[in-house]
Length: 383
Image (cartoon, rainbow, N blue to C red; front, side, top):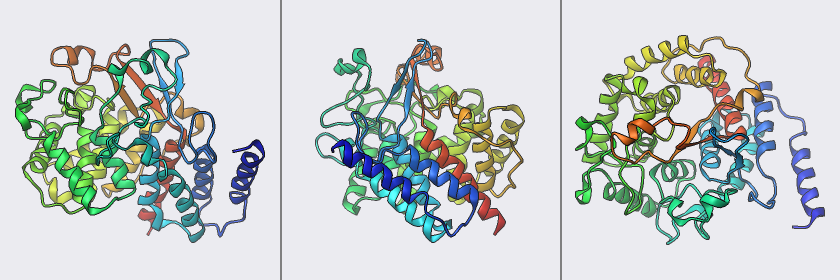
C-alpha cells in the first residue's frame, strides 16, 4: 500500500468515528472509538490490518517491552464485542461489525500450519514465534505448539463450520490428560489422574492444567451444545474441586500458570458459571463470597473492573469505583507466557510466578473492550 493510500485509509477511519451518532450512551460511544483507534486500520511493517496490538514485557530486564502480534488479544476483543453487540444502538452495531470483520480476516495466519482445526498464539505460515526478540525467535525450540486457549477463543469469537467444531472437540479429547498413556506431572497429586483438558496440542509438549483455559474450553463446549463426555464432566468436577479447596485464591500461579492472577481467575469462572449455573451447582455462592473478599483486598483499578463485571454477571449490584484511565493499563497484565508452566513438580511450584521465567502481556485495545463490557453489563442491570 502506498503512503497516499495509507493516509486515505486513516482519514476514512477518523471520519467514520467523528460522524454524529444516534447517541446511546456517551461512555459506550467513547469506548468504541478508543478501541477503533487502537486497531490497525492498515498494514504496517509489523501488524496486519485489523489486528489489536499488544506488548510483551520481561520484568527482569529493564526496558524490555516488545510489540507482539499474537492473535490472542485480537480474538478476545472480537469475542467481547460480539458478545455484547445486541445491547448497542444500530450505529454502534455497525461499528462493532466493521471492527470485527477486519479483525477476523487475520485468523487464517494463525491456523495450524498443516491446515488442521486448531490455532496458535503466533503466526504459523511462516512461523513467527517470539516476534521482536532475535534470541528466542531464531531458536525453533521456543516455538509453541497450537493450544486450546487460542483455539477456543477464536472459535467463540468467529464460529467455524460444524465439521471443524467436531474436529476440534476430537483433538481436545486426544490431548487430554490420561489419554495415550500420558499423565500430567505439574499439578497437585490428587488431580494427576483426572481426565481433564490439557492446554497444549503439541505431541511432545508436557501436559498442563490451567483453570482459565479450561473455563474458556468449557464455555465453547457448552455454547455449542455438545453432548458432554467424560472429559467435559471431569474438567467441570476439577474446576469445582479447585474452587472449593480455595486453591484458585491461594495458588493462582499454580492452577493458572498462563494467567497467574486470582482476580482474573474469578473473572473467567464467573463468566462460565453465570452462563451455565446448572453445570456448576457447588460453587456459585462460593464465587460471590470470593469476589467480595478480593474486592476488599485489591487496590488495582483494572482488577476492580473485572470484579465488578463478575458481580454483574452473577446478579450482584456493581460497586462504586474510581474512573479508569489509560495509565491504569500500563502495569496490568492479563496474560502471562510462562516458560516453566509444564515442568514437573517441584520445579513448577518453585518457578510458577518467578519474573525470570515469565513474559507478561497487556493490550490497550482489549482493555478498552473490558471497560465497554462493564458498561454493557451496567445497561443490563438498569433494564
